[in-house]
View 1: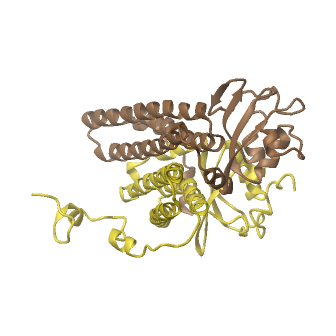
View 2: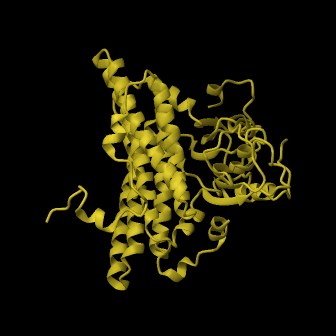
Length: 212
Length: 227
């Protein structure tokens, strides 16, 4: 199929002179998606720390979007290729809209009203869910990085944030090392939850709350 | 002269929408009527769509698929309807200030889910721009934390004839299947109970490692682990 052929061809982005904006777009995409994942986590656990992080990330997303627009305008001025730059600007705007949606959800957590229990139930009913597990003393994850244990590909679960004592690591990467007592907040299919819990050394008979 | 949206004038008429005509707004809303469904059910469906629709939108652009773009537009319309339903349901359910306060939070989440689907709609609108205006997109989507890939399932792969749930594809490879292309057409957000066929092309999202694991299994070079 031509689709496959096109996608597997490497793109010489550097030659296009767009690498600068491209990197911004990449960062904006990852930031906006992290914000939405964090938002669902903050809602599920009614967690204001995470919600505050999202509000902070929103400023970053806004700043990146601004950069993309400015660079695109500059590029048009210098090289006069409005079409490509138009596509980049529109993409950046769409990504920023997603970031705003994440921030709007965080706002619900931060507002001082009683949370409707239905919210939590809906989030638990979804196809892709958020869960949390604690790394136990017996866990094989202890002292290993996310990349080393290939956590995502071994369990299907994507780590959104890690809580260590009172601080958080948001959007950890493959080099982030896990330690005993770390709480991992993960997103993925329901079927991945028991696998992640087993990796974290959380006994199967324990209830979800005890593992969290 | 002012721009106009009515036929016969205006820039849309002149330039045309290469993506094809869109179902007009008034018609969409004519079809709306109240269905007794719970807020919980409606919100879950909205969240599920918002999880899927952005991935589909990016995929539509990198694989230049008009069908996928059309699916995104259909989901966007569905999301609009769900948002309308959830507002109606919430209003009916609200009997006190306390109810109303706690329901506004839910409606704000529903609204956010709709904004995500609107963003996805904006992304697929870019499909009407020439493909050479977006050469940077594969770079963005391949270097993102979670990458998009298309993988052909070879007829000799052990995935063939089995269901996605059966093979525990998502949990053993970490690859999330967004869509499948086969001769009969596209299957979007395939049901875990659906069967994989030889020569299916799976659009997957996941880590580099998840991709290579899925790739090996799809080529028939490796068995699925943990069977």
